[in-house]
Image (cartoon, rainbow, N blue to C red; front, side, top):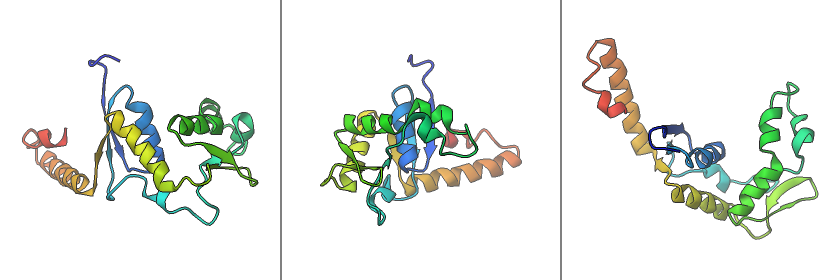
Length: 163
């Protein structure tokens, strides 16, 4: 994509969906993730009683039919289903397996922190910018100043800080 069509994309929040979105968009645009906590994907580090599963083994139409209302997620799932997710993890060097429950897990011995680090490494290699709480707070502060000033018709002074 040429630099004239490249956009600056802001993603608010640094969870699993945000990291996946940043991975996709950063191939074509400049992406910044704004996360209020100290790091991305903190929930990765808190696996539940069922273990650290990524998805389940259902794929395609079979998976899409599980969502309500019927057809709601069909286009998205048929474009990127659990098989595609497993392939994406494999490209990161994270092998997966299907457990007896039908859920998909990282290969035995791979810790959630390792998975998170692989994702972060990929984002870093694609020049995704990550701003933690401190920067997020500053941007929020300038945003509120911008709103206040705009209401009082003195917009131009603070526009620089918002962009």
